[in-house]
Length: 387
Image (cartoon, rainbow, N blue to C red; front, side):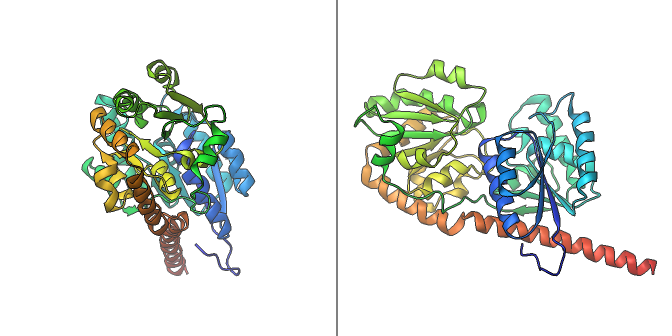
């Protein structure tokens, strides 16, 4: 959203709960683009490396002590957030993910134009009573939301099916295509895995080690992969609450890289990137891998089908929670290097044309412009009535 030098730039306040992985990268890229466009950007979030990075970009970062999930601390967190809003006086608030969406909308109650971006619906992560409560809140909270920004049509449809009557806008996720680019896999692999020597093909899975990302399903499938491709290796990049449990399931051919400062080299080193998620809005890791010219195998969850070019779907999309299908797709691609190269080339062209983060930032800017313009018109009408 370009800001005229004669107009005061609007103040945007982003709200984020403790985040890592994909959501952190989405917010970081968006904030960077908005700062470059001249907006005054404040981010309320817990202290973290993510917060430090935002400060380095030039954002005004306000400490907001908050947990990842709703609980007994939510009331106090909402009050703290209300004080931050009063201090910052933003023209627009953009809340990311379920917890920030809950606290932010409770604190604001529609008094300031509020954008909510779920980054995958909270009711997908739970079951039973908790899911019913989450759906009920999202239906209620939509009344205090000027726009619900979904990263895929699948995410929007899921919200509608849950009874959320939002004012929708679909803005597919984007990535920094200047940062994620092809490189010589052998050279990158030698730097990342210097003591392993020439060995079989490398599969990489980038994501938080948690139930959502489905690494346990991949490890279940891995035994079948090894039977067909005995020298194959798997690297899990990331950390999270399931780390110990996954280590106990993993054979010697699986390496745990932990959290890394830069995931780009791992995508570049891979022969194949796999993300076996149980649910998503639209995952970043497959987009990043394709931008690096690497083929992917992903599960058919929210946004996955939309993120792939049509030519990749028959080879790269498998049902969720289906280890046999996952193993078949992974092993089949590991055994077919020409097909991998073709799919990698198709994927890169697709990401460059449809998932460049600059395209995403422009679409979000259009949402902001629409809301800020409507607010300005409403203010002018009130002032004319008073006069």
